[in-house]
Amino acid sequence: MKNTIVFALSSSVGLAKDICKELGLELGKCEVKHFADGEILVELEESVRGKHVYFVQSTNKPVNSNLMEILIGIDACKRASAASITAIIPYFGYARQDRKAKPRQPITSKLVASLLERAGADRVVTVDLHATQIQGFFDIPADDITANGLIADYFKHQEGLGEIVVVSPDHGGAVRARNLANALGAPIAIIDKRRPKPNVAEAMNLIGDVDGKTAIIIDDMVDTAGTLTAGIKMLKDKGAKAVYASCSHGILSGPAIDRLKAAELAGFVCTNTIDQTENQKIYPEMTVLSMAPLLAGLIHAVEENSSLSEVLAHAFDD
Image 1 (cartoon, one colour):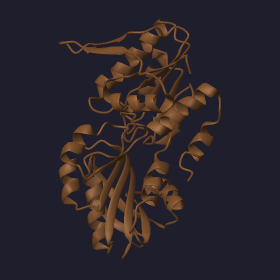
Image 2 (cartoon, rainbow, N blue to C red; image 1 turned 120 degrees about the vertical axis):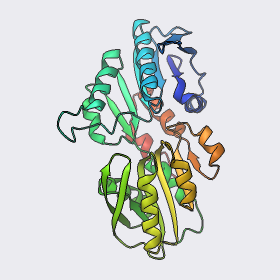
Image 3 (spheres, rainbow, N blue to C red; image 1 turned 180 degrees about the vertical axis):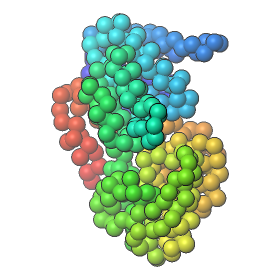
């Protein structure tokens, strides 16, 4: 992989370093500068001419700043004659704006897809998009890989869980819950909820049985944890003996960590699509799983022109 370079931008330095370690590569040299007026400059400190370049950058908070960094970095590589440019965006910001929920609303995730293409990206890689249909917003190859196997592997190696039921926090996540349940050989339950306004959810009813079982909630993201804590309370009221919560993206905005602590979870599991270094200092009980092996496998598959689906299928074989 002598023609492969992996660059880290501000939000995903740790993850990019881990990916490079998996691949046996040195992290590419670049500098990101933020000026006093808010402008951003990404300077490449090594040649990319004829190279296959990979940027690793989640577009979490500060969303707009992180998005501009990867757009500017892609443009820099394009103008420096890189052979190909892949944007690895483990957490894809604006994914929740994937449709017009009411008149005169934008479809911002489509706008972001267009910006990445126009900047010069040849391929985009994401992890557990909020809506998988967002892949269709791209006219370039777009691979959306899932952390479900990683999360399933974690729970397979936990002792004393007893009888398990996998819980979807809403109807939209039923497929995700079913996939995890199949991996764990468990049934599923679904929380029927309504959302009166953004970041506010009210748990209504439970479809399924959790009485006397260990409930594992699976979601694509946890933001303010309002939805999650409402679901946890319902599951405990319905007789669950223990409740675990898991997600791909631990956004953990505002009161999220205080809410998770107060919920008395048996465990909270997320991945490092969003850097959790600071959150782990105040919430050391959380478990953070690394996406580096999966993303490194993806890069290797792309570089070797081999099957990505085979890499993902065998990633957790015992």
